[in-house]
Image 1 (tube, one colour):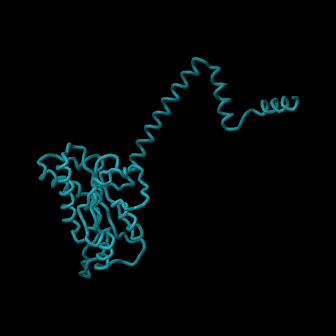
Image 2 (cartoon, one colour; image 1 turned 45 degrees about the vertical axis):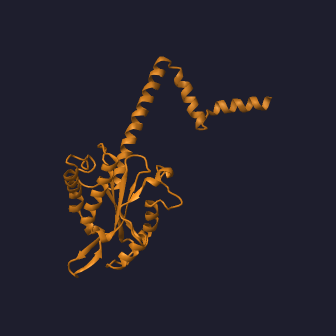
Image 3 (cartoon, helix red, strand yellow; image 1 turned 90 degrees about the vertical axis):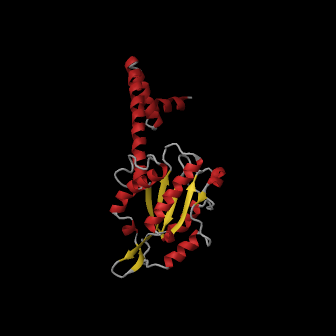
Length: 250
C-alpha cells in the first residue's frame, strides 16, 4: 500500500486514467486488450468527476492552487496465492476498511486494474475531508487526514482486517510497509537504487573480463585506447596530419 496526494488541476486527467477513458496513457505497462477485466467498486451515477465537484462544493476548501483535494491509496494484491473469488474479496475488504476510515461519501472511485504488468491493484480515490474542531465544519485537509499516526498504523490495521477475513496471514506488511507508508516516489527511488546496483555489478563484471584480456595480451590496451579516441573524435594529431598529407599527394 502507498498513497499519493493531488491538486485540483490533476484530478480530471487522473480519473480518466483510472477508468481508462484517456486517449493517451503514458504508462507503457498498460495492456489495453486486458482493460475489460478492470472493475470499479465505487460506481457513481453522475460520474466520478461530477461527483468529485459536487462533494467538494459541500465542504470547506481553501481557494489555493496547491491544496491537495484528491488522495489515492494504491492497494496491491499480495504475492500470496489467491483464487479469482479470493482476489475480489481482498479488494472488497480493503475498500470497506478504507471507506470506514475516510467516509464512503468522500470516495470518488475505486478502480481495480488488472491490465498492467505485475499484481492487480486498486486505486482508492477520495477527497480528504476532516472535521474542523474549532469551527465545527467539514473541511479538506490531506495533511490531517493522512497524518503521521495514520500512515504508521494503516498497514497494521489492514493486515488485521484481512487476517480476520481470510483466517491466515495475507501479506500486507512487508519490507516496504512494516515501518509505515512510503510514497510512490520513495518506492521508485528504492527500485532505482536496486537497478543502479545491478548495473554497477554488470560494469564491474565487464571491467574484470576486460582486465583479464589485457593481462593476457598487453598490446590490446593500445588498440582499445585508440578505439576510444576515435569514438570521441580525438584521434592523435600526428596520425591525422599523416593522413591529410597522404590525401594531398594522391
